[in-house]
Length: 74
Length: 491
Image (cartoon, rainbow over all chains, first blue to last red; front, side, top):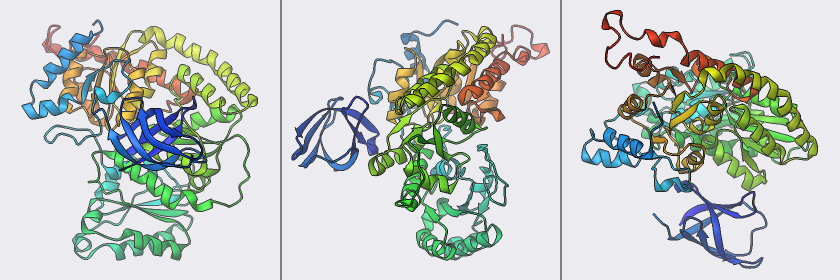
């Protein structure tokens, strides 16, 4: 489990930031993206993926969360 | 000498690495790379923020340097205690030339060195009592100080002193913030962790102090974050922002005050210059207070214009007009500067090796002068810095992370740049090798280099160094014209 932060970039897309590994990357897809259920598996542009527990969509971004690494390229 | 091709650069890296033993070579290989601007993720070709190799010369600092020297030190109206033995504070005192306005010793304390001067008995019996007494004394001698920070040196962590408890107690007695900072030098691999620890201390002990208190704000409130006012940098940046109609409510941390830090959460936009040392607090403020942040670059007219427009894009039309007005006002002056110096500097090649932001930020300024950056590297950058750097640098240029003394010398011998920009520790080696050199940490006691005014000084300094007649006098009179090495470069 790792602390991560999700924020919005200028283009409106989601950005994933993992401070421990200085990993900053766009989120290519998010498993659940509705107001009541948000989260699940996050696919990053670099090919890696992380999992956050599905939860109600946050009222505003950025938000700090706990995430589990599913698969990372390196 | 013509530009190196990709193959040449790769061969150069391999050649330089040959002297290392097997294991060291494998480790260092990961830190050296040939740039490819197409790569999105720097991780694939360069490793950074790793422990330096034992036995080689590194130019890095420690966590204490990152916290006391960089982030906290320039806050002028607080007293920063170097808690521990006397040397760390004394030998780094006033070294970064963070300019400020104020009367030193009365309401500002930037150039002074406060230390608890640890002796053997403090190590054996603990230094908490001494620290409490020291803070009392500071209050008696300097009643106009707005607060105190306790910057730990290595022994504090080793003997397990409870500086947090002392700080809390003293803060109540003094009715002023007393901030314990756990920035012992042994933490982390470089000063970078010191920045992070200092940012966390700001977050925990300072930032929330004025939450909920009234503040007369305007829609144009911005802050300058991560500008340390070296040689007056923050001032030459600030006037541009003010000229375009923005109100700068805080400067971190060059010429900064405690009150400004406390007011920062009231800003509409945080402008971040040094990404490496202050991104942590900007990200925190974005999450907690919803303040967006923006990286900007005030080196060289091209980048300044780009940055001013990017900043203005966050505001309404009056600011956008203001930005255009500022750009059109200064552009003729900059054109004159470029017209004067570009013919003298055109085509000169530069190698950089600086700290955490300049290796990529200054590239634009050199390009404005027609110079080419052929190699760059960071002391303590992380992956995200290299992500940003690789786009700025040309194809097949050299990248070196935490370069060792040996590697840097060998690169310079082979690449033969016309100018090197690095720090004081490298300066005299390269000057003795006959290569023009500028310190890019302290601007070689010149500056400012930020902003339009700074660019004029920058251009003059680069010309003064590169075209100095002294470089043609490097050969000893008896050595003749064909002497090897030393005079080869001079032109």
